[in-house]
Length: 509
Image (cartoon, rainbow, N blue to C red):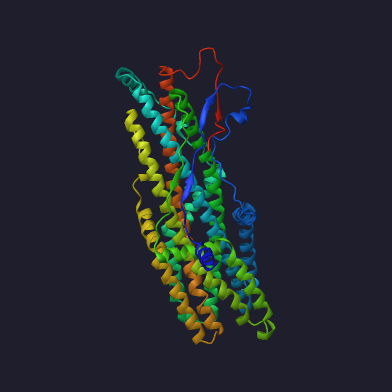
């Protein structure tokens, strides 16, 4: 019993092995199938989560990145700015607004953590299924090449090397014009120059501190401004991630369609009936500190953090009369949400980099398998476009990314929070003491959100280039397989048979 409880307690945070197998694609002579059934299984299909709670949580995550929520947040920030003209000089107004912004940021933290984990799960399944199919491609290409005479190989290779493929056929689906505009805005908001300007503004604020005697109002102005900036970035990041995830699914569908068509052509040429092999991507090895970070993220991603926040809010509201609803009381909930939010910001940065590195490692395995196929066919291997030379600002961004995402940085952030709590306690949790736990975390978390957008842009750009290269390779290999058919190494169908249609082997695992 104790052993089972221990295993259950250790389960969160574990990044287990990922299993994947691509459904078999082959041509069939049956023509009574409907068109949609004839192409069934050629697109990428995400497995549905078994637990109802997980499915509902994913719906909440998708809703948080919707246009309605994003533009609603923008409208709310505009209203806040306009009302601030009238009420901005009052202490309670500043504190209440800071509370609302801190709570919103806290909620978005949990949603972004789950969003990040969902992206990782999908990308690992994609890597596993493509590795599963590329093993079959390699086997069948080897068989087809062995059946060619040297003269046929020379003729075939000469023809394929001279043939110019239409660039439109090599291009994945593009975003809509509005999507391209939002992506451009994302690169502006995540540019390292804007991050530098943010810190310039912070130091200017510190520089004018003596003019305001470092008063509570001086601190509240920065707290409100940085909190508003942070909410904007939270809402934008959630939206741009969902938008890019949707576009990524369209690109994956196109990639899997040409990958499935390639498999069907090869099976027809070689009469290969062997199922695609199951691929197991082993669990990443992590140190204890990284495991602890993933452990915490698993709880946040299940929205346990929001449940705790609701409990704290109920207790906070119940103590309102005791504190006479003072500005100090109003700030309590903002202090709690702000400190936890700052820690979550460090965790998000760490997850973004670590999980992405695990996916890229598996995509490199796929790239090496592709390279072997191209070597055996003699075709020129299209190198990954993601390996381009980075600009100066991108190289700076990468350095900042690595430092801010390191697990020791997460630990340093936690120690900073403990130090702020000790300082506020020494000040007996006065308004000034609470602002000590609000302003620095708000500034740091705003910075982390900007770096998150920067990191997202770098990762998304790399993913697009990698998917484009994978797609280009498969289009070229498909063209090669079609030329194999034309020289009739092995007829795809009997002379009198009807035109074959593409279908999924129902017996495939």
